[in-house]
Length: 383
Length: 220
Image 1 (cartoon, rainbow over the protein chains, first blue to last red):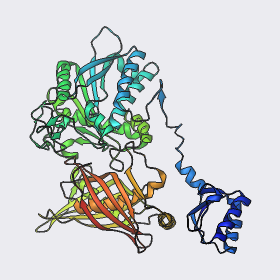
Image 2 (image 1 turned 180 degrees about the vertical axis):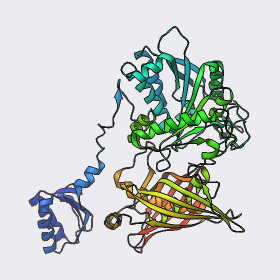
Image 3 (image 1 turned 90 degrees about the vertical axis):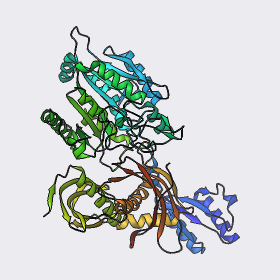
Image 4 (image 1 turned 135 degrees about the vertical axis):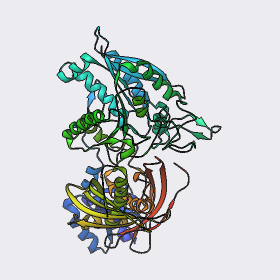
């Protein structure tokens, strides 16, 4: 089908066009009614494919000039239909894991998940600057022995939406499969998982409501003329030494001092209190497709570098094995840039041996605005 | 005299981002968007009184033709001491890129047939979606931002297009199409998001050129 654009020049042309419309029962897009066709005014008509030639011949015969506005109506219709996402949709207990969710929904999700599972309990970590409660989920198989802990936090940087999406996916996967997947059930016999789905809640909400590319927290500085600390420069690991700014308007503003931000303090306090039991600290970011090891503030390798690298390389290989996505492994200082005050470096310096930053998909093509059809493959390969 | 560099480390990666910007400007269009699949090899040569020259072997992919890859070599020369001059980039693409003649002509005809000038915002949107009919505009934004990225790259920056904030078509009396973009560039080292205004002229036979570009006023 084609849509033609015609500007009738004379009353005779108008009459002929009106006749054409009624004879062929053509679909008038503009104006809506044949009686509103006027000389000198735009006319848009959709002509069904089998009639196109005949209509055009008739227009030519009557010296009525026309232009093809839409050469293929069906193609346009197909393109504007939302793609069938049934193959990508992952819904579990009514929650769609292949979409990005605002904070309200994530809070609700945490409450539901805890209700529906005997393995999950929700705990308070602290409050954000704007007074919102920070919750983490503890996934723990009841047992009489104390278990070692793996900690994972997501969403320290507001704009990295794939990160909280991964934390939610991770929890869902574990709960769905711990009965049937021997690897997971063995895991849970010996380890507890602590997951913080959104660390920088204020920033995350801000990226939904005001500025999609916001990174920092939302604490005010300089008399409220400037907002936000980069929480991943605010930890007490060589704080303020390199790769930071002391200017609040910078995206790598490290705050007024180490742990100056309530979010940082809440996390640090908790991890410190459990540190003798924490085996592994994971912090999830995007983008870059990297598994980063300490440190950012120096190229001098950490004491257990060999072990760190070996585990990271095996993880990267397993990840690549799923969909061929290539991840690079190495220290932040060599792979990315110099930085100080990162949560990963801090965790390692207080004694947590395996401490990693994951930078999820992609490598810059979409960057922070990763389309939702990549949520599933990203999460599956990272899992 | 040229030192081998680990391709996974940042010095080579930053040079590759500059080369990619240049490549997108040179070879991109509404029917072709190039992405870097892999940086295979990198070497660096420090040239006295001139600057640092990077030799790169890249593997590229046309996002509209994902199954085939194209190899490319690039030379990126960062001039010594000069903060305000763009790196010199030379590229050699091995083999043929898929022809976009038909898609280009269709796009050209479509835009020319529009009664009202095209205007759009937030490409992709917050969730990462691009309406299919705007994909060619999205790819032209890659061309425009490619120019800005190339022109503004240094050894201490790694620039990527984060989002197209705004695009407005401007009708012209000549044969070219004109699009005024506001693009948001993400700079990896400072983590800043930098808004740039870029005017891109494009024609199916003449290709693309940036007629003007400047850093836009403070934030979004």
